[in-house]
Length: 350
Image (cartoon, rainbow, N blue to C red; front, side, top):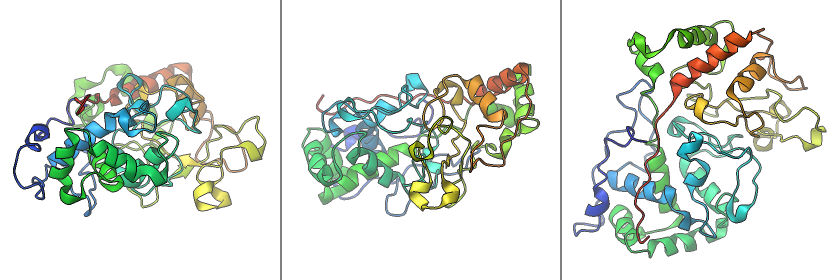
């Protein structure tokens, strides 16, 4: 994430270990996204941003020692080489156990009103605790404080937790707050598309402009993926979830992942999942909540053909009758939404 961290004072990592008032966190940095097309990332009042907290969360995000067996970190499911999403169709958790869904891209995750494919988590802090205590990292919800205390005893972390959180030190809640603070800095808003939208006409080539026109017109992708965030999921209190037929064909209804229905218990939400952002989409295959489509053009072709008909398929999906050339043009346009990379920090005591 080369550009998203440029405004952060990462030297706070060193300063936090040097004297000073451990109960007085440094003044907060500029709110991520404030000067860009996406606007400021929402920050909860009970977890204000500071440079030192962000730097601590950055390390914790990459630290596999947080997991039950020392094999998995948050980054394990969101690596640069996979476009910040998952390499495997279905995510792999601690002890090599296969989970239930694909790991999504987390660029601009701070703007999302609810987290996970089914929207069951209402905050980044809650999501961090869920992944940490659940199958992703395998610690167990009842063991998070004990694991946090273990992490807090590592030289280098001890001083940082004291500097950021004072007498609270390392707890399940402070670990989650630090990770969430770092994740709020994962802002992708300076892509070639953003430069084009700001007036740099040469930022997109002829095929990409053609793809953008199709995206906004004939293909009607914009109905669910409007810029600048490229997802209807943002800007709503509960998020937006649609059934597009993925994971349903050839399966008895009882074996289908019910998606959002598991949260709301409403029949209308059966088989519905959040509308993902398309930022970094060209780098982050495979696609959909089950990782069942490996190729971007195949994903576009599926959506533009109307998806798989079932009892709850969204009426927004119809066959747009796209040609292969038009599908390729849309894929080319989506490559203009490529984001940066996450920086791997040096970890304390390693």
